[in-house]
Amino acid sequence: MEIDWWTLAIQTVNFLVVVWLLSRFLDRPVQRMIAAREAADRAAAEDAEGKADEAERLRADYERKLAAFDEQMDSRETELHEGMQREREQTLSDASQEAERLRAAAQAEIEETRSRALTALRDEIVALARDLAETALSDAPADPLACLQAELARQEEADLARMRRDLSSGGGLTLVTVMALSEDMRERMCAALGAALGDVPALSFELDPGILGGLRLRLPHGELDASVAGRLEAAARAMAGGDDDA
Amino acid sequence: MDGSPLSPDILVWIGPVPISRAVVTTWVIMGVLAAVLTATLRLARPGSGLATALEILVTTLSGQIRVILGRDPRPFLPLLGSLFIFIVLANLAAVFPGATPPTAHVETPAALALIVFLSVHFYGIQAKGLRGYLRHYLEPNPFLLPLNVLSEPTRTFSLMIRLFGNMMSHEFVIAIVVFLAGLLLPIPFLLLGVLIGIIQAYIFTVLATVYIGAAVGAVDA
Image (cartoon, rainbow over all chains, first blue to last red):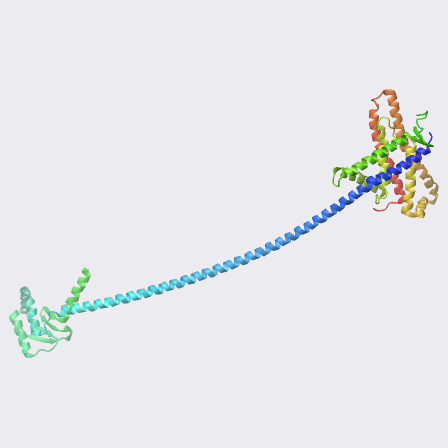
């Protein structure tokens, strides 16, 4: 085996050229590409980190806004509740005042109605009293003798007969008047009674202002009432009976 | 070809300079490499698949060198990466009809081993300084100085002979098989030659890296 030194030298140079070629056209460009890619990766990582920071900032901002919103919502809810409470209290107050006003108006109306009813009732009572007095006094003679004679005249014969039987059973007659009668008037009274009832036993006289007017004749077992008080009571009973009928 | 198959296959003479087949094959490889690299760099856009493939090639070589050296591989990458790529291409030239791998002739492995020998001392002196580099011949014991000095040419010689012997013997085996068995039978041997060529390139590069690493000393990258 022999070594060709020229070939050895040429191959040495050739390999050095290869080293230069690969360094020039492979190593350096690829190193630049790697550096560029790593720079791009770093930039992307920094960008991603920046975006992550931005996202974190946005998230913090969102949470802050959410907290503020919740606080605002709570505040508005509280305000709403307070407003509703105030409105409810105002409504209750207005309703209470309206009810009080309506109650006062109703009370006033009731009072007015009652007053009108009392006035009307009073007027009616006055009218009734006037009618009662007119009824009681319309045909009542002022003279006691005329009053007695008119009362005896109004009696039926059967009543007169029953009064005679009552007198015949014993007892006396009592004539009740408002004022004391004169002796002449007493004799004329006895005469009138005798004319109507026949024999008149002892006739006594009695004063009673409570009969208001007219006279009242007391028999042993009965009474003939021609007094104003009696007429009033009869008229009152008649009115009461008429009201009941009504 | 003259009588010895190991003699240089001179194709042409340029004055006193013989141009052998190995030299021409090397020029062809250099031309193809330059054309491919130029076209590749022209076509490779950042982020493209081609650029990614180039990045993978360079970063893989850098990773292997970093693992062996234990330091930043960038100062050594042009030499060691070129060694691996050139030896792979030179060894794979056998698959082309009529071409013989330049590494099957002793001048090319000798040139590569010579460059490695000089590079080891260059990087060693650059890393440690002249005195520091020369001192490492006295380690671990000054009595080992002769052996340390002797190991320099012998390991360089072994580096050369390992590559040359493997590729030359492979060429002989292919020639013998073709002579004995015909045209198609050597195909499996050619495929085996591809594997052998890549393995030999890897071994040569790794050993060169180890020698340089021993010269510069392991430093954390």
